[in-house]
Length: 225
Image 1 (cartoon, rainbow, N blue to C red):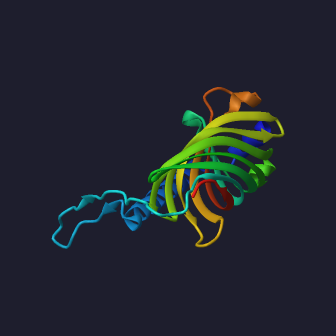
Image 2: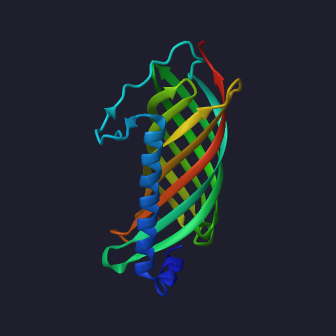
């Protein structure tokens, strides 16, 4: 895996890759801003230019509980980057398909959850030695209405590669919505992942980060009302 990265350095264009990072970060921030305004967490300025400020979260009453456990499937786009100070950055893209086991607990207008994921890797990430990714973590967030949840997430992750296993961590956030009159939930989320290359013999000081945009569907068995 490391030998393939060194070959890639020979034709890497640092200026183009910096623009790619700016594009992805800018797009993610714009999407988050639209999501916040659309869900009503922050009111935009009125016609008179007066900022309305945040509004209170709605009180969720007489609704099916989000408490329960289930399984899900998901597909993701993965944008990976190796960076080493003044040496520049190297970028790779990939895709994945995977499975998820999850449990949630509703407490008033908030939901706390735990999930374990397993994903198989394709694309450039597979070409340089990537095989599969495990992760285990938690999430917490408010219910915007009876069927829609906003959440932040974080946890541990391990990447299986041809050169060995790399451990790391992740954080992110997303939105999940329950389809009416069904046990199916649709989820869209973003995760930022960082791994330790020294686990597979890589030099210290080289960062390996992966941005993951995942869309999935979960089926949950409910407990409670």
